[in-house]
Image 1 (tube, rainbow, N blue to C red):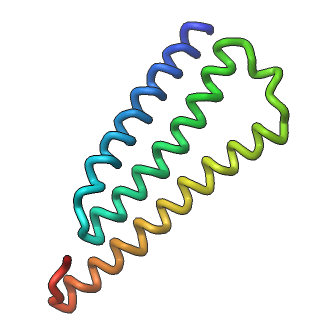
Image 2 (image 1 turned 135 degrees about the vertical axis):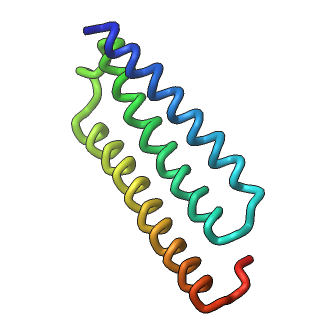
Length: 107
């Protein structure tokens, strides 16, 4: 069981690092769709990093010392970051689709 937890931590670190790197790569693009993807990747990075932290705490045996309120707050932050970035992505993609349908130039 302990090996599975450490594999989860390794996978979480890999996913969070990759999402964070992609978020950084999208900082140089100013188009609305790219900005939306950047914020989506930011939300994914925050949520994955927090869930990876929980997996690490469980794997290292320190999870029992984490206060219930703190654990709940961290989970709420993860959910809010993911939900917020997903909603923002939907709004921006709808805006891009609307501009394309109207024949507008997209910057």
